[in-house]
Image (cartoon, rainbow, N blue to C red; front, side, top):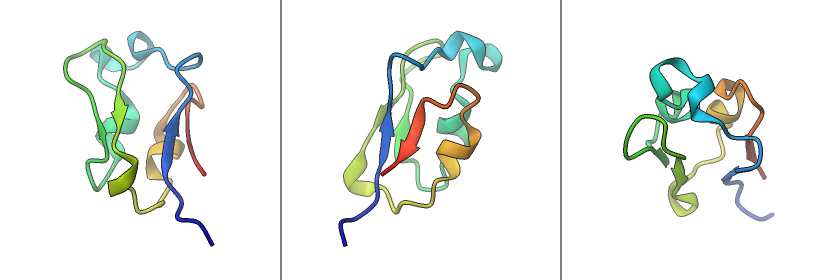
Length: 68
């Protein structure tokens, strides 16, 4: 079975809709797999570090983060 990892659909991602431009999925990730350089910037995933817990996907209000 392939390892699950976080993926971001950048067409759905809009950090300006998160509080103070800080991505909720980034804040929720317990392993710091998702990173955001500055408020209102798009988050970047580091899939090789992802454990597939899906906490980030549950935290994203736009449904832009998924684990597959």
